[in-house]
Length: 114
Length: 117
Image (cartoon, rainbow over all chains, first blue to last red; front, side, top):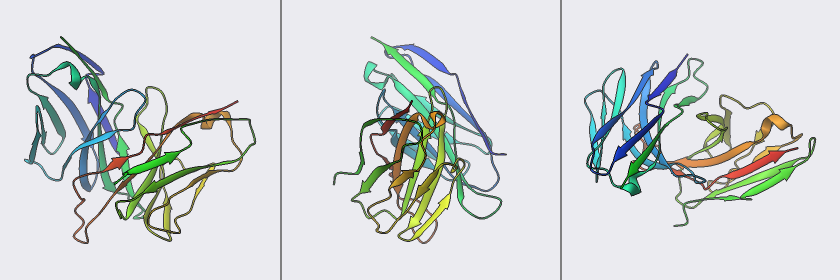
């Protein structure tokens, strides 16, 4: 069974204190790994898609990397407006071939203190 | 572009009532999804569609039905509401190229908060 585990569950950082969020996964036939940001009461906001080990993508203070077993979301010099829950999801072909299975992690709640 | 819109934003149902959650996207995306998000849990895929006229079950389809008569619209139907269906429902869309690569932006709607009493 596909599994996605995110750690830590919650992270509190001082403004400017860089850190990394982890998303470890076990899946057969990975078609893509997605990172999202979700603010309270809102839908997830898409950040990145990674397809294969070694791939990296950057957007402002965020950088996502992918290995065969995990993905990291690095946050460099975070600001209070980066406070949100960050979700990771993997998409893989379902063993039955019936659909492309999407499995989400439960997220990391990030709080950046001024 | 308005992106993905969902209606209603909030709804309270009694056990056994029915309702349809509406979802519309104006980006000509072929893939559309319905998820539910329970407190402290990850999003669970209910149904998805790869294009007009084509739908398939996700991880938690029981108690729900969908249709996709147009590229833009992907309504979710609850026939006999149960307390276990209390959740926040999100619709999403993304485009997949013939090569299998996804366009780099997936959009989620703002969600529908449903309570079944």
